[in-house]
Length: 255
Image (cartoon, rainbow, N blue to C red; front, side):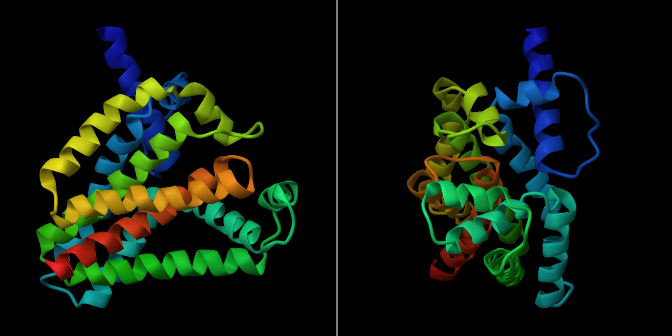
């Protein structure tokens, strides 16, 4: 029991260190515990998403554009910008002509192309506009939608770790080799049960949107790269968040 609690603590600390900029420190074994514990993904999404959503509490006091800008800054202050590098590399790989090998070369290339600039610009603009949408919602709804999107995108990443295939050595394979399909059951039971109970609340729709946003780069990578790598994990994280928040805002609009 004590060993299990310690392992969960290490896994969550490792996940916080990898997925956020929160000052959690580092200890031996954190990374390995995190890689083999996919449930840590959505748990960190819940905690970090709550911190990043704090500027939304000012929606009743400040103008919507200011609140949206605060949310955008908070997201990248809490989550960091490392995963945007995955969006940039994916953008370059999307526009290049050639087979899977050529696209993989582009993913590894450190040169920033037009595709990368466009992909990052669209992603950041999409999140800013999503924040503007959140600022128009009731405060509690806005906060829960932001958190739901973060949980959904992180659960999607956990699913990639459990069921994805990495075609070569790298960050992607470190996750896919350490996580098993059986370890997906715990986060799936918690996240999907909560989503079922809460449906059709906008926060629940945001969770589903976050998961859906992750499937897009995952599907593309399987089809055009032969599998996923670290860049796809990073891109999935960013795109899932944007898709989740927009889905939640749309759900509120249609209620």
